[in-house]
Length: 236
Picture 1 (cartoon, rainbow, N blue to C red):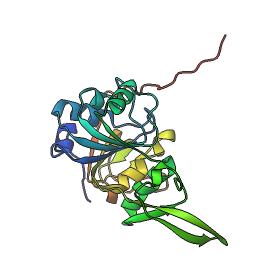
Picture 2 (cartoon, one colour):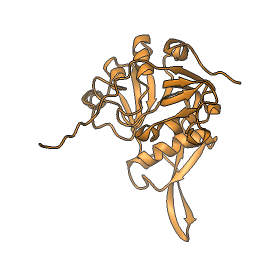
Picture 3 (cartoon, one colour):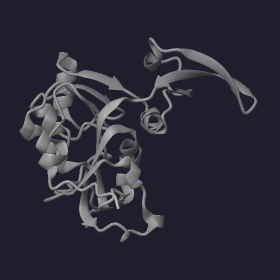
Picture 4 (cartoon, rainbow, N blue to C red):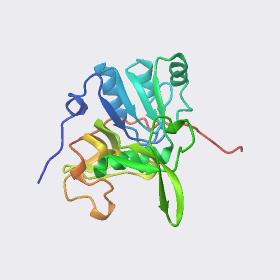
């Protein structure tokens, strides 16, 4: 049986270098690879391009890498919770590519499927389309313009799962499934940190969201904060 387990986060991330492109899983602060992000801060790697649905908050998630100015470029669909992100973007310190959320997800999946490009109607006629090819296709009897978008090319995908086994099979919970599974497919090397690591064969095959064939390294994570991004409570 293939064993993809590495002993810790240091071993999992040891060959991430300056200037690399990383897919970083999670949605808001849900299902983010907290251990890997903390280790990247500790390593001091810089000039990173990060592909992520969002940029965390000022003092958590990818916001930690923004604080230390280790990120050169962010490719995201939503960045509204991070004041430091806004400051760096407006000052020109940070290069930003904003992508419609569905397009972001599909470009991740295309990388996993080995498809170099996709065509989507999202963004046609907007700033998103500047410098990109637009083609007409007839679909369901209607001719429309579609924007060509390229699949992402990421050196590493860094994801977080609720459970994983020694063969790299992963199970996510709830909102953590929004981007982690498709990013796990798309990296040249995929690193998975998990809350619980179990022997191969213990996970119900019907419950596996990411098959181990996509995962190159898996390790048991530690000390998850699982912060709530926006806490809403009822009045008494």
